[in-house]
Image (cartoon, rainbow over all chains, first blue to last red; front, side, top):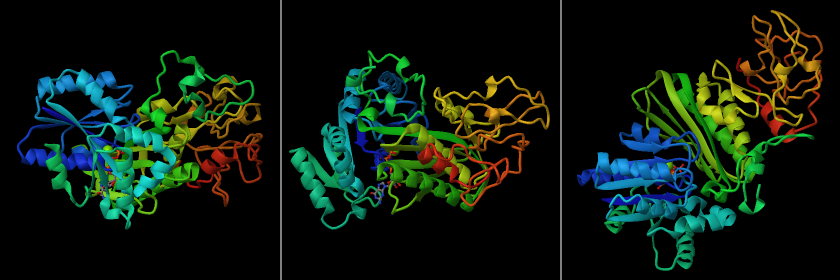
Length: 195
Length: 285
Ligand SMILES: Nc1nc2c(ncn2[C@@H]2O[C@H](COP(=O)(O)OP(=O)(O)OP(=O)(O)O)[C@@H](O)[C@H]2O)c(=O)[nH]1
Ligand SMILES: [Mg+2]
């Protein structure tokens, strides 16, 4: 069993990527369990996933990297026992710190083969986010095994290059891949990196 | 309260006057470790409900509500850093999602949905650098102003009822913003009783609600908490309060239950928040 944690700021495209991944895994006949968590009491992603035909477990009313840590671990154990999937994909809130989620997954003792954090950065608001919340954004990306610069379809000339340079400078050695989850650009490469 | 722990209790934007009692401090900060949402300076708000007669027109109205919230967030924090979104779905779970990330791009619509007599909706917003309570107010106002035939599930708002915001039996919202310091509504504490058609003297008292709405049930009790329109008036004299109807909206979209002649005692205070709320003109009674 492999656990994928999709980390990234609000609206960066985590749920969109999650749906792509779930479809890809299902096509490969792998059994997938999806766990979504949203800031606040009310979630939308669970309803969105359901409407799109995906079966997701929602962890509401808190953040799984802090207040709901126990709930996350309990849910993981139940998923392991009841579904025993090949893959678990976790979408934490857009304000969560994915490396904290990974620590919790580790400590849940579900015998996973590996945990992979996929970091997503939204090119459209990259500069804004860095200007206003550089420290938080850095912390959010720091645990990622690789970073996707999403919404490349919306990027203005030069934006991808400068975001890539910023990320390379901040996280030397981490692979940075521009993608468009919406259009499917570069996703084959991502699937390859995930194996 | 330990400032070093950087508790953000003080950033909720509660409105306390002099002699106030803030209960933010009542919880135990000994254990307080900053959550990631606090670390980001973010907040989330949302509620669920139902919409009657959902069609493409209603979908556009809902999109307008998202845009209104987006404008508020942008106005408050300078940019929309966050995600405003809504899912609309039928009993069987089929439905659509509306996302607002960027004001220039506008609302993105995902999925299609045939016309439905009644749908459920989840409306949520997670953004940076705004006040959670104000955000909830704005969301409620946005949906109220959109012209949708909606009802909010009161239980989905249970975190939002302590400072005077409430949803009535109809699922519509109303507010009691107290300026006298303790954040409590004192409408029920006067001990006055009104029969049918009775005159309301609530306005003659010293208490101050940014918005008040008075209604009387058969027992003559003040039903301040049970309806959804807003008053900002404190000196209504003995005019009958026909809260069930007959509201008047002036050019600013402000509501004047008691007629145009009345003064607005509060008009000078709390300008930002209340005037923004009052600036919304649509009546939803
Ligand atoms: N143009 C474009 N839009 C995208 C892309 N990926 C996602 N989006 C859109 O961005 C919006 C937000 O996407 P989500 O997948 O909901 O983002 P999220 O990270 O899950 O959001 P939160 O869960 O609220 O943090 C949606 O309207 C998506 O359709 C992309 O590659 N290009
Ligand atoms: Mg999401």
